[in-house]
Image (cartoon, rainbow, N blue to C red; front, top):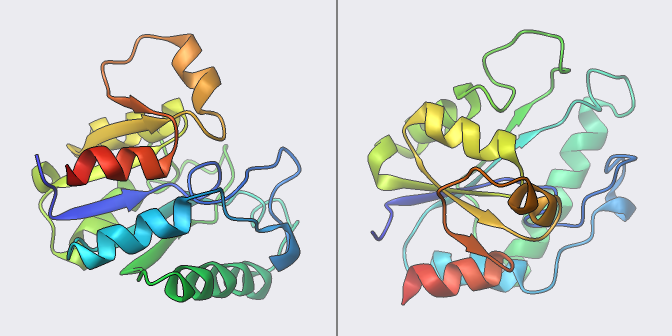
Length: 177
């Protein structure tokens, strides 16, 4: 299946993850090959959007302006590599806020799909955690797992019937073959 749009988790898929959160532009470091992978999707005419839980906002660890600065850095790095994002969709809520946008709830993916005018059965979501896979399933979107970030742990936990790739570059390579 060649998707009409690709949705990506942020931390652990595009950039390094941290148990202490990504709290500033200096904390944001792209994973090897991730920016080039997004550029390949852009060149192939496939819109790409990011869907990310950012509970550091609800925890008071980062301001809205600080998070926006990180996303500006990420967007600039992707554009410098020849890629383009069609949107960045953020859940700023904490795990106990009972919202419909915090993955594994599907709301964030629904927002992205609506903005991109992409039907769920024509979309692909690439993530590194069980909550990413569950959000995709609940949204009716095909899911792939990458081993970066939390991906190896997620894969080891088992119980998934999804394709697994070493990283975003490998996933995009398989997608575009």
